[in-house]
Structures are given as structure tokens and as C-alpha cells.
Image (cartoon, rainbow, N blue to C red):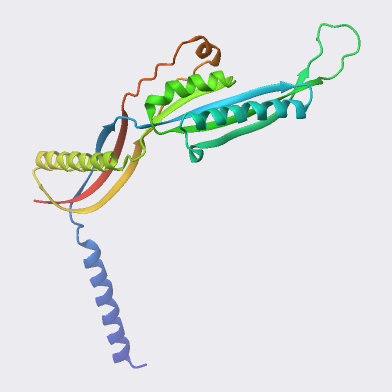
Length: 242
């Protein structure tokens, strides 16, 4: 390769390097990042009731038979009270042995735990689409032999409208924060570069779990619906101008 060709290549390489340095040296447009929050509330229009039937027996089959019969009665009572088949769902099921443990204070050779029976637990999740029936259905469950559970979760069948309203409020909050910060810095806000919805939380609120023995002694179970809050958080990246 001639000296002239080598010089030409060297010039081109230098031009390329200087051009890259010039581009890298250009400052990025100014921007500001803010986070806004918004919320909306809805009165609950549905509830989920968690119930558990527990039965004991000397054998696993005896405990299972007693539990199955009790659960059949509970489910039949729920259907009779107006709960649809699709709103009944088995949530948990277990069979466990019961042990008699030796007295550690007893003299002589110690033996291991001895199985003296079995416990069967069967959980039922009941979706209630009319929350005015919650107290009535709790009473019905107790009368039919439910002896554990009783937790109520109050929710909304269609919370989308409230969530969208919370999004709008979060956007307004973020834009307002950006304008305040820009004004304090002596600049103006420009176009929105990026929007991110960081989180959304809210929905069904759990009510306290009732003791079935207390419910059995009560004439009725009072249930207050209250409100469900839906919260949304958004993050904005906004260009700023002098």
C-alpha cells in the first residue's frame, strides 16, 4: 500500500473518531421524573366466605364419612339459600392422625406417640353476590355444623371503573408535581417521554374471623360493608425546557 493510501486511511479514521466524540459530547435534553398517586373507593357488592368443617373419628374412614356427610349438608343449605353452584368451591382438604403422647414424668421405659384417631378438615369457599345475605348464610353454616373458619372478604365484582378513576387521579397528581418542581427550578415542562404504572393495590378487605361457638350463641351476625379503596401509582418522565 502506498504512503498516499495510508495517509488517506489515517485521515478518515481521525475524522470518524472526532465525529463520535462530538456526538458523545452533546448534552441530553433535560428531563424530570415524578411519581403521582391516586385512589378511588367503592362500596363492596360481593363477599367471599371461608368455612371449614372438622370431624374426628377412631379411623380415617369414620372421620372422612362424618366430614363428608356434614359438608354435603352445608353445601345443600348454601344452594337452598340461593348460592349458585359455580360460587361454591372446595378450598382445603386434609386428613391427619391424632396422637396420644406419653407422660414425660412417667417412670419406666418411654414409648413413642400412639395414634388414637383421625381428624378430617374440609374447607369451603362461598362467593356471595348479595352482601345483605352474609349474616344469614353465616347463621345457616353454623346450624349445619361448620365449626371452623368464618372469615369474610368483601370485594367488588367489577372494580375496573374505580381503578381507571384512580389512574386518572394519579396522572393529574404526577403532572401537578412536575409543574411545581419545574417552576421552582425556573424551567417549563415539555412533552411526556415515558409513563409507567408502578403499582395497583386494593380490593377485597378481610373482615375478622368469627368463632363458630360465639356465632352459634348469637341471634344473627352483623356485617358492615364499609368501602374498598383502590390505589394506583404512576411514574412520569417529562422533558423540560428553559
